[in-house]
Length: 107
Length: 123
Image (cartoon, rainbow over all chains, first blue to last red; front, side, top):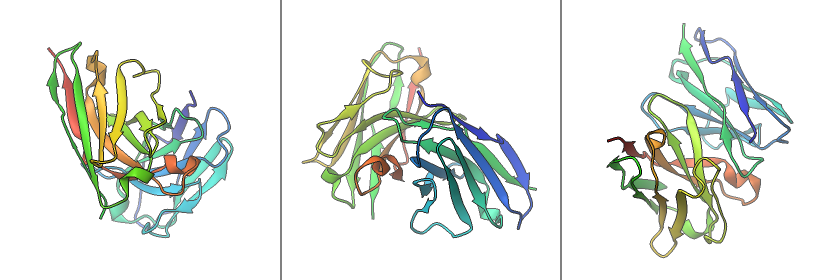
């Protein structure tokens, strides 16, 4: 199985800050990576797929990059409504796996 | 509007069985891969199973292989998950999810999620 490791596990930042979350795959996955946002009590929402393609309707302050084993999710200017847990997901393998999640809070 | 509504969860004893259903609407169900994902209370996301649009191809990871079976009835726009030999580690919220359009690998990114049905395995 492909292991997905996110860092940090949690972070606190101020409104307007640039925030970066990283995700590392235990083996190369090309660009078969997605990012999800899960707000408290809600279902996950697809933000980005194919490592860097923004899903329709997602604000442009979200962006993704990377290929192979190392990926990043960036929020260019943190907003209060971005408080959530963020998950990466690899789908290179038929056995889809998720990262453990990164909890984002407002400082 | 895409809607995915799960049902069938509940309290079941260890070793028991349960069948989950997911009623889909708002899209052409038969052309999309569908999946089940679970989330234990306070924990992260765990992939459970996948099925192709025509139902001809399925995948179950080792954690559930031989115990869980995904299936679909395209005439009823319904996805199923038959679960057996349940253990406490299977306690979770089970969500039905729709794969993205376009086929290929990127259809394994999930663009719509149901609210989930809670399965509790306990004596």
